[in-house]
Image (tube, rainbow, N blue to C red; front, side, top):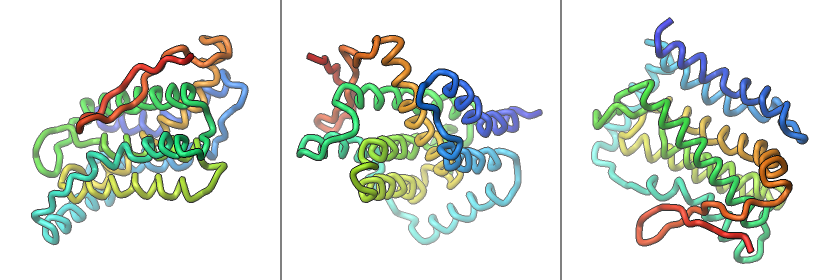
Length: 245
């Protein structure tokens, strides 16, 4: 079995492994239906790694059409849109639209999601070693920008889905826009973007399922005293240490 095929099989099975492990650990057990969308997205990407097929051919034809119709497109909004849904969570809470979790708990969940998505996407990029459509490097699969965007969109969804479906629609629209910009900017193939969305959604879902267990077992039912909070200052994205008083 080739390296690409082994990775493709692993990508499809990851959610099932996570489901079986989390199911034994948490009091509130995840439902199988929660995995449907991430599994579909990851499966789509896995198929694209299996040689010459319809999905991989769609990568080429879509990129060719975009280059033909928009050869000079260079709008880098995707560098900022990927963080917008997470910023929205804190902004809404600040103006009085209360989030589902308190500041420390939701920040801990966001930090966990960030670690999961960056770790899984980064490792996959190295293993797959797919060349970008622009030829810039061989870190095309999956799209990290799209993964981050869908991670934060799922974060917004989880915190405000009980308030209004409009928040979820806005968050996922921004995430989808981020993926589209990656295609127009010649940074990724369609399958890179779809797979990145799968990694992003799955990372946040896992964090929401695992965090209650960690809070109970590690922090003895209390929120952690300190967590890393995302920050944006003078054009740079980073993390600040937040202490609970």
